[in-house]
Length: 213
Image 1 (cartoon, rainbow, N blue to C red):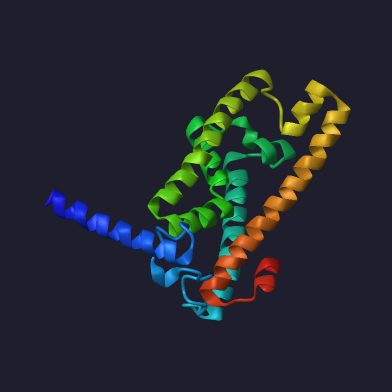
Image 2: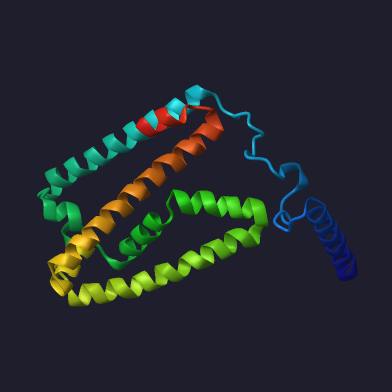
């Protein structure tokens, strides 16, 4: 049985290599021949209607807006939590380790991670998604160590720029303000365009309209 499996894998490998050599590249070794040079998994034809796209965009937006507002109102009514800027920025500094870890993973798994990992899996197979995630895991581990030290050294800090100003002065503070503003603009644009491109591929909804909504 082991010899039969090994022989089958060898045949598949030789066929893939021959296909890659015929196209002059080894990039498509893990991709099925039917999807080589294709820009869409669905062949350019959206599997869902445009109405479903509007329902997804407007429905999810309305649901999470109402749900979040209701949670805040209930917290204020029954727990007496004052909705101040300090509460908004730090959640009253009452977030425990488990929820903090969940937030870090949720914030790290954004549009670029989901879409690019899927793209790597489509192009290079399961190993592509695995190694893409492995590279991001190193940064998450380093951020965890950094977060512990920040909590020890600056327990009342709110932002990175605030700590930079306390440590290196106004010039460094202004520099980091500019960098952080540009980073947030790029990240916001990427999230909007990534989500719009996904819904467009599924429903054919206009990308510009999706981004606006």
